Image (cartoon, rainbow, N blue to C red):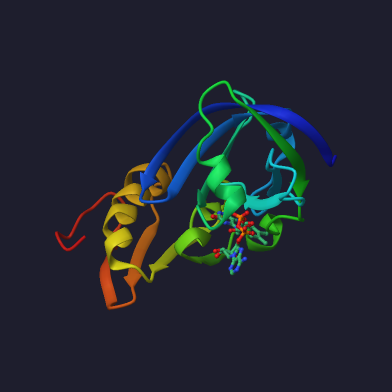
Length: 184
Ligand SMILES: Cc1cc2nc3c(=O)[nH]c(=O)nc-3n(C[C@H](O)[C@H](O)[C@H](O)COP(=O)(O)OP(=O)(O)OC[C@H]3O[C@@H](n4cnc5c(N)ncnc54)[C@H](O)[C@@H]3O)c2cc1C
């Protein structure tokens, strides 16, 4: 059910310049689906609307959701200043989410670019299919840090899948998850 409420920040860290990774304690975690998003309200009332941010990961047992976002303007700049214990105002869960049942038992390509990569995590965890994961980045500087991030934090929980990583400069790395070919 969709609801607006005040949740609590469990943790936040900057994983690359202006890219933040936040865990939030919220009852919305109980029925969050991969592909859904939250509306996050800035406290500054001059920024009226909630900012849509995708759900990256859920931990229903802990009652927590994870978001990963890039600082784009005033709203996300404000969120980047939050830390453990801070209140955060949310509307969720929004959107229909990915149709998991349509991919079940099939071969599936999961593709994302830049800040579109994080929602693939929960999809990869929950989709019962043979998965190929393809991610891309336009910024080579951020790219190196994010490849390290996605290997360790996003794809390592997803075993027996294939990961290909592309940058604006072409193919940078490709291989089984957890392996490193020395180029990334
Ligand atoms: C369904 C959905 C899911 C999303 N999921 C994610 C996610 O998981 N992670 C993520 O990082 N993002 C995500 N986004 C994008 C995110 O919602 C936006 O980056 C966010 O709303 C920006 O809010 P803001 O207040 O920080 O920026 P805003 O203030 O709204 O500014 C947005 C852009 O406009 C520019 N701008 C602002 N004011 C002016 C001005 N006066 N003149 C010129 N330019 C200006 C800013 O520089 C910035 O580039 C998602 C969007 C959608 C629709």
